Image (cartoon, rainbow, N blue to C red; front, top):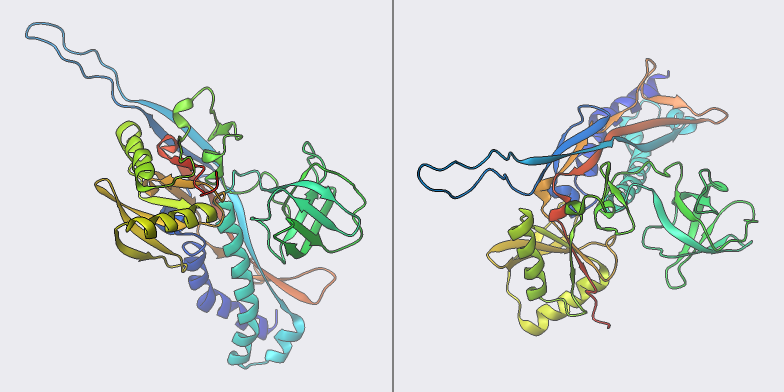
Length: 393
């Protein structure tokens, strides 16, 4: 390997990796910033989730039997770690032109690293609110001009490379690695590159490239009623793992919020400290705040740039923040102390020759920043889902 490439490797490892690791672990979402991060111990992540309370209590009288033993019941949660990657590329031409000028090397890397980080931030932030399936949206129409109509464009963005599945039961994509070149958010369509799409369908779905069934087990797995299993358990057979659902009836007020937060505390041993509102729900709550002079104890600035409101809900403080990946007219309340992200942290996949490999058939070198882990909640039933939070009835 050339000395220039070795120097670029050292710059990436020593100057960029520590900052990238910190940023990717915090900035994608206020939720990610607040949850615990612990080292990944094994590929299968396990948690013992308490069910209700200890049953060994009872009243009695002198001389009569004391309560029978009834220890705390637990359920075994488990899920596998997933693979997460950030791809960083640099051309052989860039390596050679940088010569021995360290400043030129940093300048050459800076744009590539920032672009890779932006991609990682978007995808991890989105996946935190997915259900692990990797499905970004359902397909309702495909045209030969490479325009695809989707059920939602909330989870897509220009530049994203996707796989296109033209059947709900498909295990392999009909079209792989197509890049989104434009998004029409009003018409809910995307246009992808490549040869004309010949399949005409009103079924199927899209995923990020190679990601079908391989994403983080995000909050969608808890809150989405169509997801039938969670952490290896069937929801219908274990209703205690289902979140509390509160219908705001298009009147999302502090009273509604308090009712959900109080129920979680009283019956699910959950102390909701973060309430994430979809776009329409957040707009409705801001309107309510202005019209009713709601007391905001202070604003809360997150590292990733989001600003939330700290409000008093009953006798506790809850941070309320807008979250673009929560359904528009919903609000999701969580006790962040119940969540754990088990991860190896981020590091470069390396070999004897260093962190760069030459991509076959090209003059481009590739460095792969990798992390392995997943998100798990010890008390999913203590989460609260508020529906119909928008102003329109």
